[in-house]
Image 1 (cartoon, rainbow, N blue to C red):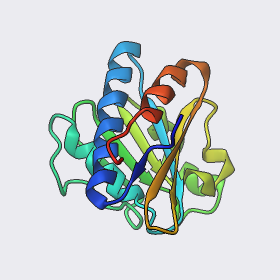
Image 2 (tube, one colour):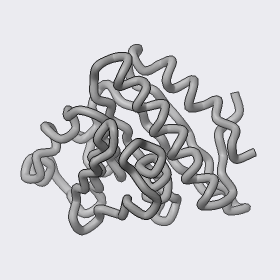
Image 3 (cartoon, rainbow, N blue to C red):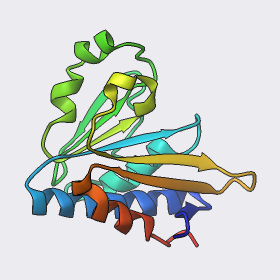
Length: 165
């Protein structure tokens, strides 16, 4: 299956919108929250993707989502609710505990964690992982991996996105 890609910020936001809508549907069907872990280099488009995700959900709007690098956690009153965390400035399990990461990551709705790979203890056994890679031609690749059998179908749906080409 081809890797989903985006050539512009708008296409990255479109993938985020697709992710948000599919994730919301999964939460509704499974009556459970969903954790989405994002990784990739600085400037790869993680926050841009979250902007599209939040804007696509009922109660969201464009420009609502901002990087939580310094605040660490943002909550968005969308339907379902979105909790947006950034682990870039955190360096230990103790730091995770200090922000209530375990409770936040198991909460209702969609929990999106930027830099989930920064702290190995942050990685749960069941989650959707999206690694954003920037190619030489400045195209973003979204490498999707579903961790846990309950997420396999959602992972396949996300991999099928072709909005960026």
